[in-house]
Image (cartoon, helix red, strand yellow):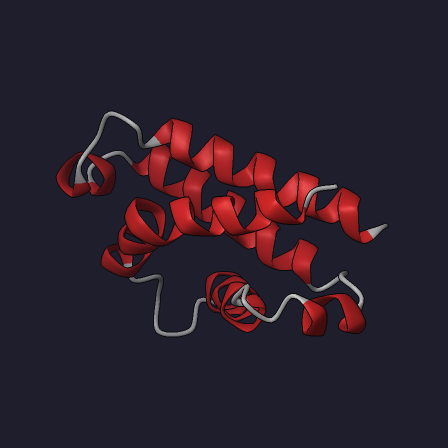
Length: 108
């Protein structure tokens, strides 16, 4: 899979997550198990995708937190100490918007 294709998919995952949570706060998020599962799934998919990026590409774009994206995927998939919903919410509510902007700048 080419790097640009991966970035396009990652942006689509961020759009999907941001659309899911656009009208909720943390309380609404954590009480909606389908929303939580959908967001967590999409975050894990993003982590899986960035594993497929060329090393040279990720080094060239080191402003993107590639290791954190992969690390979150690993925590979700392997359920290390359970998924921390507060952490997931903070990522979804604040970090994801910046990530989308950063990834969008990489699209040719």
